[in-house]
Length: 111
Image (tube, rainbow, N blue to C red; front, side, top):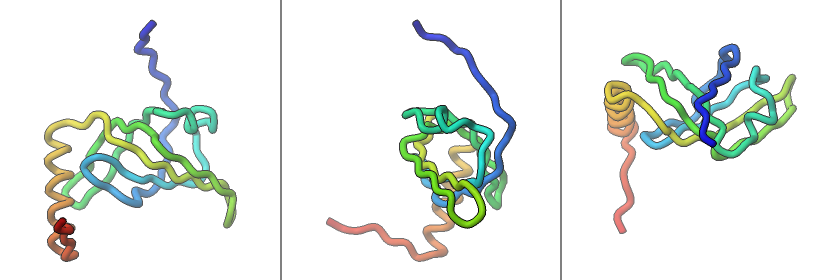
């Protein structure tokens, strides 16, 4: 049986370590999300990332997680894949990634 039940937690602040058009790696210390929820494969998260041209919001699914307790508290690192994002936010993200690639001189590999 498919249900559309949604459970919201209080917002957690963190850092976006890596971002692409298909996913992102997020880190945060502590969490208002339980370990049982966060380590469940496919755990959905609603994420807002502040970019220079404005914030982008997405629903992402956790595909990887790591938990450590070093340096003053529990730290989570989660790898995610983007499931849903508005067209305007997707365009803003694509523009941001393109500008970063040009400014950092990122080159693709030829096969």
